[in-house]
Length: 99
Image (cartoon, rainbow, N blue to C red; front, side, top):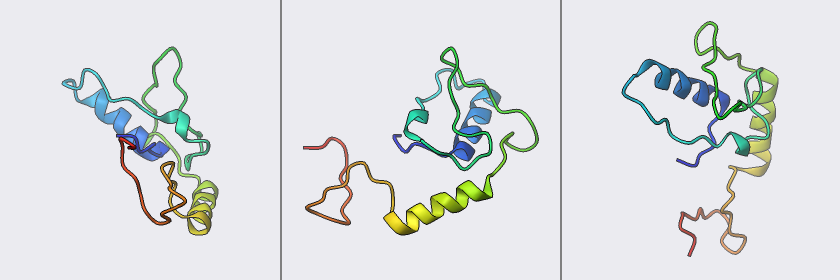
């Protein structure tokens, strides 16, 4: 999946991978696609090719209401993030592979 999840989604996925022993090769992550995140801790950053499972209550991350509001404003003003935007067909989403 090439969705570029938020920190909340990534934290949940990290906890699931840690808790379910049958997940031996977790899926790839696209942390590099997130210039800003809605969690106080900021976007996850791999170190030595690993991302530690967040510790603490719940998912181990804290929602940043200010960043969430900023992302909401960006969505309202610019629409959904679409790196496959086709200027000749506004409002249309293209799928991979791009032919």
